[in-house]
Length: 86
Image (cartoon, rainbow, N blue to C red; front, side, top):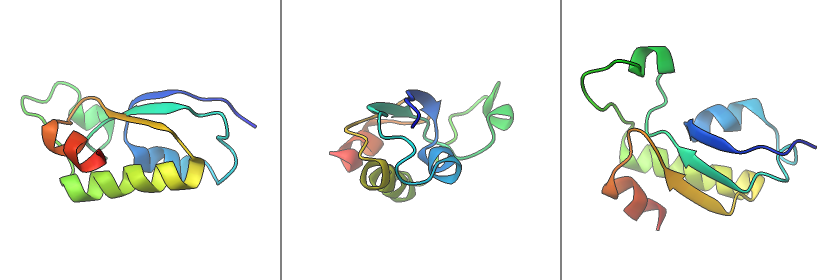
């Protein structure tokens, strides 16, 4: 079993990389708001984020699939994403 902490990573990347039960010690994520490749985001002149409902659904799936208790936002997230989490 792996113990991980993720910051500034889209929840979809984690969901695609790990099966249920592989992250039993993951306690939190500060999730990136965009599912785009980070090389495309780095140096961008504007904030790029996925639609709020799609991002929130990925966060919910991460919580349900891996029992991640602490969910938060990082780059590309704003009040709308945090309200959707709440």
